[in-house]
Length: 300
Image (cartoon, one colour):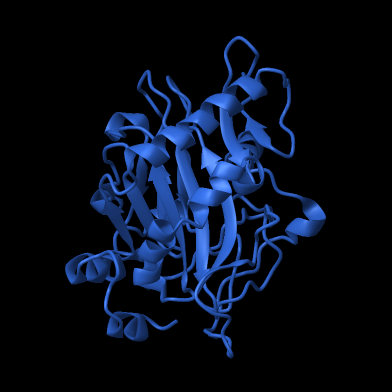
């Protein structure tokens, strides 16, 4: 749905200033939006998954594990296809309080796209380089966002999400290296064109929600703290915005209408960026794996 049509509708959750800030900056932080009851349920899932990971020595379809992961010292980078890994995660993703908040910036009719739970382990959890999301899963329009919720208090030392305001109005950058390999990151020469000195750390207490437009340049630093930084991330689109390519990590819920009604027409905008690899043919594990592999190649 077009931004001007969204703004014609009365907001359900956000005040008008907050909604306008989302469209101006391309992201919005809503401190403490998710309450204690849901946080307890989500943390219980995290604890159960950490325990389950101890039996693994390598990544699989559920877990993306860091190279130093072991039973005694787990180090999970990502729970992949998260809503398929525990019923509580899918219940949260379609909770009315969640989808109503998303509806305030995407419109009343919403479709679910994908899901992951990033752990950002303590004392060195991986950084994520500057990137934009939409190039990994292009759609017929840019009415797509990521809804993230911090399950614990998150400060600058824990490697929170960091975004560059206004970059959703700028170009879509190639996220391939000079040899044509997908990197999932902006090149150094493209980063040099951006106002990285204006980067905003998206911090907040447990339950803080971050909404991120699919075009905003964002990343996160290393977690230098002694505390885990679990962040549950779900991607939604307006229902009239359809994927152009297979999802990198499709779930059994991908494409499900989670709010409102099925549209009669498709929202179409020009898509100027290079298409990603065919994920259904080449496979995809996580942005951590893609960026790590690209760095290893660059060092050879």
